Image (tube, rainbow, N blue to C red; front, side, top):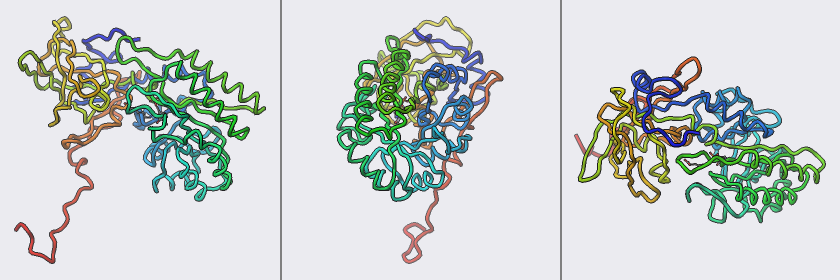
Length: 430
Ligand code: LLP
């Protein structure tokens, strides 16, 4: 448990941060494979761990998951494609890839049908669309039990204001709807939000049991969804995995008793598997003093890590001093990025309130390491301000491996075109 977080860091998993920056450039995402593997192992008691790849979907990370027996979730045609490219084969029980979404777009519907994927329907319309296209399959229903939970209002995925899942009161109607197409509701799924706690979990388990009883013995699997928290700052905790498992297992056992057949128990974490494995390494490019504020401006912005501007998310940070001096005095600083937008600040609270962070004195050329950046980091990156996407590196026991090279500006422009001047009018500019 990395508490309290150090504010100076010279190495990541035994490799010098300065060396990584020199070799691969900045901004750079670095993932420590050993942390991911350790996390997978800690969930071994569940029948199946299904990785919510939206958290960090680089092919090398998916390959790592697959080689450690982890199944995968996909929310788009793109994520299905990634999973197959990383070696996941759709067929089998339990299904290696599950498509979980609230809608089908045309590509996703095609891909699911072509690959015979297991579909987790998050809206009644999805049942119709899938039933018409691919009748006679087993499906899962994603339920909204009427309440939710989340580390921020934007990540709460249950309750009547949430767009996710099938409203709990419509379960029976949706089971009947599925039957019209010969679809069997073999699975039930609830992903209530990120940052589960045990008290809240008891309600989720109860809601799952009620729903499964209502759907009946055709149910052969239940999924606890994702949401396992990781600590981002002192005072935050992991969930007690023994207690978490016990509650879900008890629910499963009661259902098995009632249905007189086995019921699979899946868990679907994203953050828990990758957040703490990931670091965003940036270079300090300006140090500004304004009245009593000091700014460290780095070459990474919310185009690389959007969580602070989106949720006011807190990430631990450390300085890697270029001169190796790890005993510098500390000061309160504001850390920002290069974008032409005042909100491009890594030290902010929800609502956009800028706050200071106590960090070592730093100079241009020192590095800043933003920690716990392995989940919802690179994947939420953008090309805002025409900034190329960052590079990604995986640290294995045999050293660092580049798993995504930095995007070039030419690649960023790919696909754009300037239409030929209109021929029926005089061109506005000569
Ligand atoms: N299953 C489903 C259907 C999901 O939608 C999600 C996350 C997960 C599993 C995994 O949840 P996790 O274990 O990672 O909490 N961008 C936000 C998080 C959005 C979560 C979206 N769905 C953030 O940076 O905190």
